[in-house]
Amino acid sequence: MEKRIYKDAIYSAIAGMTKAFSHANRLEILDLLANGEKTVEQIATQTAVSVANASQHLQILKYARLVNARRQGTSIYYGLSSKKAYTAWKALRDLAIDLEPEVQRTMDQYRLETNSYPGCHFDEIHQDTAAQLLDVRPVEEFAAGHLNNALSIPILELSERLAELPRNKTIIAYCRGPFCTYADEAVALLKANGYKALRLEESYLDINLQEDQWKN
Amino acid sequence: MEKRIYKDAIYSAIAGMTKAFSHANRLEILDLLANGEKTVEQIATQTAVSVANASQHLQILKYARLVNARRQGTSIYYGLSSKKAYTAWKALRDLAIDLEPEVQRTMDQYRLETNSYPGCHFDEIHQDTAAQLLDVRPVEEFAAGHLNNALSIPILELSERLAELPRNKTIIAYCRGPFCTYADEAVALLKANGYKALRLEESYLDINLQEDQWKN
DNA sequence: CAAATATTCAATTGATTGCTTGAATAAACT
DNA sequence: AGTTTATTCAAGCAATCAATTGAATATTTG
Image 1 (cartoon, rainbow over the protein chains, first blue to last red):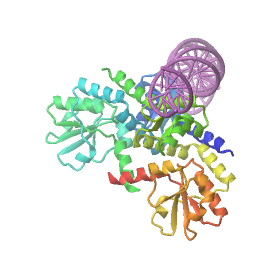
Image 2 (image 1 turned 30 degrees about the vertical axis):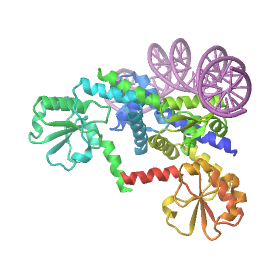
Image 3 (image 1 turned 30 degrees about the horizontal axis):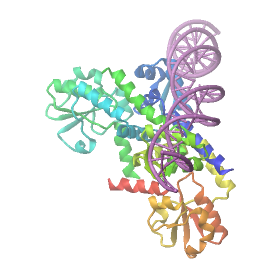
């Protein structure tokens, strides 16, 4: 094999897979699926596209082996194929947060408009006994994996279930990751009801991935 | 700001940056620039495209902030903008090596055709006194950064400079990374001349990045 | 076996991306 | 100042990608 042919083949194959990452909707889908399996319809609804369109994007992700599909009952559940797929998405995400001003600006503006307060990091609070972790994602996502000692109250039920939360602790709300707004909404609601509350910057998967690093 | 508008803005901005990664030639350029600054002409020559075409790809990479440009004398030198950019490329690369069969197959076939021998990893050899690290990249790349205790003999000069290598040690050749063939060529030449030689799987940057992880 | 339902396919149209060519720019050297 | 040289720009054409629509498929459930 010619050296040039070899390199072209390799880099083209990688670029082919990389193309799966280069569409806003597909990134959103990956971010969503990182938190647990979902049906095509759920994905379409939550990312605000048509079912046919979501299906097409899922085909592309499946062809690139970033997600896999599993039939259960009448539906097909799509899920992230591997942790490495999340690692790659996280690397791209962190890079963009770092050097794409548009991303920073949009995040800042959102937090300003919604009067969000500064978040905190897992390292700072995870052995603080005066802090209570609160997972505000849907229950299925909590079931698929969550931080140790976290309480599960989905954001939609939070206003009715405030009583379950300890009054004497700071509530640390977390959700799907840096672009998810559930935790911000939770903090706003909690503060309005007299709780001390903060948003955790990391998601469950970010922590999970980090812990894996120490294992190796 | 509407939640939907916010998410669309964020994911679109990230996808915009990600598009810079989704072309074979641009990946090859990133891989090249990770080893040190180069002029447009050098990049064009080494990646086998026209100068105008290389320039266009570089504009795209620059716009995405993955590379930056610096004028020196009559030429413009392009270089990787940050270590994070390499981290992201490495994450994509590793993911593809892991789950894109075409990449694996091509690498395997190349090694078979060129009778390449199995490589070794930095962990296994870096404090082995019976091993001699050999950097076969061009001198400028060696100057831009190299592994401790490595000798620098560019692949083009290797056949004339064999005498500089210790006969009693195993020569561990390394180059630009997993898709670079210099180290394979070096090992073939060394073995043909009676040396014990192995290819190092990692590049200088891979090790460098790994060491940074422990620092944090 | 038939009906219901979730998902995928196929075809179309418009938008974006990629490469080539030849000209334009801009800095550096004489 | 004029010339050289490296790089970029602009225009054009081909190829690829994206969203929509409506139909087709396949599996479950009755």
